[in-house]
Image 1 (tube, helix red, strand yellow):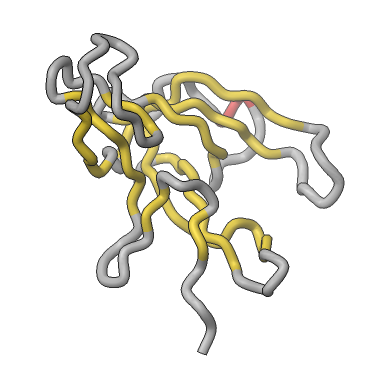
Image 2: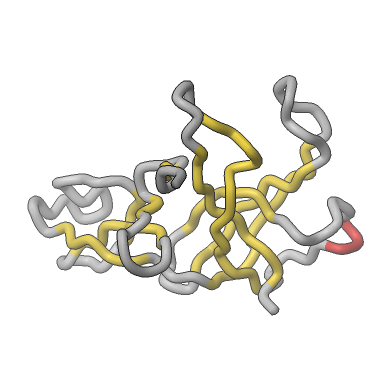
Length: 138
């Protein structure tokens, strides 16, 4: 029996029961959403008003770049994307299941968050990682 995968980033949560999700922190004073834990809202400066929330699973493609050169061992080309989630959060990740061709990618296209193996990467003990990606919404 293999161990459960490790999250590739701290804001990717893998509950013992249920599906993985991305976690944000929302200010209860101004409703701004952030990635990463914080005590003070950097928009309105409210202290101790941050609440943990599940981020939206859908959004729209804001920007992208097709990457043709990367670190050794990273398959290219791939699409690095910035997505505006439907809850107002902006997040960066890779766009998958679409050809890395500008003719196939449209700004504003609807996308969804999906979770999958982190391209076969493993830690020193052989544990796999779970990552999040974006794909065109079906």
